[in-house]
Image (cartoon, rainbow, N blue to C red; front, side):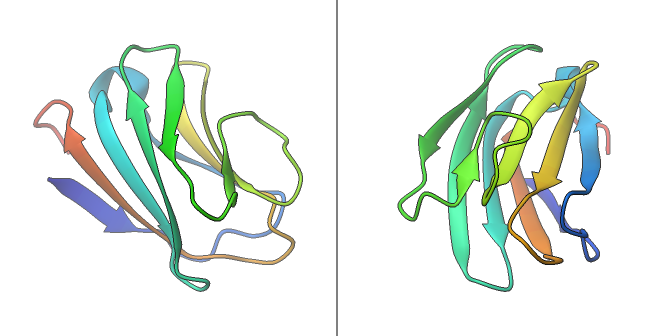
Length: 100
């Protein structure tokens, strides 16, 4: 398991979590302020697939309004906040390489 917490991510802002090649595996992403979470799989360096999102709070498409977007751009896993206000996230990666 490898994970961490983000600082505040402003609305309409993005953060890079890591290179996609170092992030292959299952990801759990939680919006800490609203206690919603999504489960994703990154199976290659170009595709993020959403496996579970019971509240509809997440997307794998850049720019989707009203959601937290988790996608790959320029070879990096990117988290984008489009929820309307600043958010804090907790992330967990099950898999991936052993570098931090």
